[in-house]
Structure formats: structure tokens, C-alpha cells
Length: 427
Image (cartoon, rainbow, N blue to C red; front, side, top):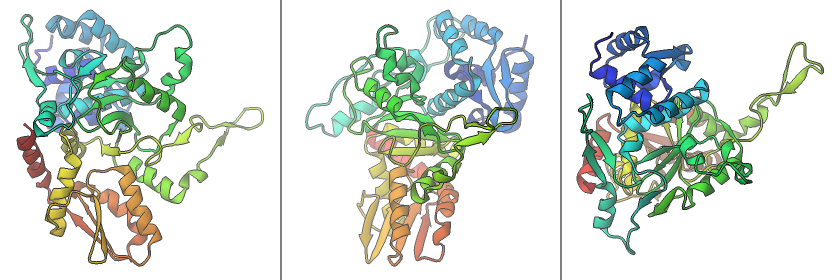
């Protein structure tokens, strides 16, 4: 039997909690590529995990042997009922990989994913008094404690969220709250493509995975899933102000670019609705997945944040746990990039130029900025973003390269300073 080390338990634990996880998501761990590859191969050879797909679609899941091993290693954290849910969640590999990657990204960013690390649903968060002050907001951030298991081989400490703040719930768990009898299932909740839901001090975020395309949605399903989140069956007590918020993950910036460009230029009208099939009577059939409405910057939620599933996205994601993190980010960028002090707005005018701070990757804000640039041919503009976001904005601004548009990129270590300042302020 393979002698397991920390890296093996890290991989097995992530697969146990998230189901199917892609190779690109596993690359977000702190291990080097070669070291991770060698140990993944060792786990496959030991029949503890199995691999599906190839290339960017390659993903991993626990085998029966792997589930039994984790259940024996820590029967309190990985009981039989939990391992059975893990098995069921990996049956449809393609869909499971989307949910698993979203959960893995949030887990690696410090949010609670495992049931032992967060309150069960309905999750209660004490409401804030009106009007709340700094100490009340701070209490929302200080809801993390550490816990360990009294028996078994697993002696590690795990973080536990005392409230729903900072806790991520898989969509299958939320949908499972609906009764299976009667007419409840006909409400269309099961048509939602949400991977899950994350509550932060400022937003109730429905989480989606758009891969590298602008996905299509049945908005009735998304609307009813959102209504379910507002019911007493899911959350109680405190509810963030932004309840229409969305977090969209993508493999890279491809999906974000398509979402914005479809909105600005209507490229979706050229998408095929039927496809020719050889041997089929009539010659054509409706293209699979062509139904529904194409995801746009604001038809699913506002704010709607976009993050690539890479280490750069993992740099921004932990900021969501802090109150008013976007205002804090805007204020720091406006000061550093434009020399404007104490300005928390993402858009403002000064000396005849319009300034946009788009580093939070808020899709409605990006679409608004690009639409204004597209329609106003005379006004000068300035855009500020993070260093790793330059490829996205270079592509989006390509049609306007002859215009007076100043692009400011923040230095690579800028986010370390922002994250440290936020942590010191709220903790």
C-alpha cells in the first residue's frame, strides 16, 4: 500500500469534499507541477483515485477504495453517508467537474465547504442592529474557529464557520431542501445551472461555472432557485444587501470576453440554432444546448463578478469575505494609479477625462465602461486594472486602439498590500 504523505491527504481531502476536480484546479495547490503530477500518478496506481478525460477536461475523483480509505482515516469527518454523497455527486462526470472546480476554488480561498466546517441548512446568522457600526460588521468576519477530531488518525485542525458568512453550499444540497412530493419540483428550480451559493458580508452570491463560453440559461430556473435562497428553508437572520449577486468562474478570460462582447455587439445572433446530421430524416435538428437565454453582464445578477480558475483569480477571491472590499480596492487603486485620494467610486470624471477602475471584474461595470467608450467617440478615458487582467482588457479595447484611452496596470505585488490591509482592518 502507498505510504501516504501530506500531499496525498490534501488531494484526497479535496476530492472527498468537492467530488470531481480538474487537473487545472489541483494545480492551484501549493505544490510544484512535477511533484503534483508524480503524486497524482501514485494515487491512481494505488487505485485510490481515478482519472477521466484528457487535456483541459482531465479530472479526478475518488474510487471505491479511496472513499473507504478516507472513511477509515477519519470516520467522523468522512462517514459512510458523506462518502455515499461523494459517490453520487461524481456519477455525471462532466457536470460534476464544474461543481467540483467551483467548490475547490472556494475551499482553497479559505471558505467553508465541508459540512463539519459550516452550519447546516437552514443556516442562521444573527441579524445586525440598525444602524450597524464598525464593530457589528467586524463580528461578521470574526466567525471562524478551529476544530480537530478527538479520535482517529487525522490530527489536523480545520477551520469552522460559526455562521453562514463565508460558507459555501452546493446547489444539490440547496435543491434537496424542496419536498419531492406535490408540485414543488415543477417550479423549475432543478433547471438552475448554479453550482452553489456563497454568503459574504456584502453579497449573497450564486456561483456558476461558464467554462470558456458564454453559457445559456433557463432564467425561470435561475429565478426560482434565487427565490428558494430567500426562503426560511435556506437562511435565517442576517441577509446581505446585495442579494442579486453572482460569481461566475471560467477556465480563463475567454468566457468573460464573450459575455461582454455578445452584450455589446450582438455576436450571439450568429450562433447556429440547427445543425446538419447525416442519416437523419430532414437533414437538420435543433442544436443541443441552443435553448435558453445567453448569459449577459446583468441578466443573471448585479453585481456579477467573474474570476478565472487560476492562481490570479485565487488572489482576488479571498477579498470577498470582507465588508465593502470593492470600495476599499477602488480607493487604493484611485490613489495609486490616478493620484486621487479617498475616492471609493469605480467610475468618476476629472479634468475632462472619465476614469474607470475595473479591477474587481464586475461584469456590469465592465460592460457599462465599454459601452460608453463605444458610443462616445470624443471623450478621453482612463482604465485601471490589476497586472494579470491586462490580457482581458487588451482584447476588449482592441477596436478602440486609436482612441485616447489610458490603461493603468497595478504592480504585481499590489494585491498583497491590499489583502494585508483588509485583513488588519477587519480582523
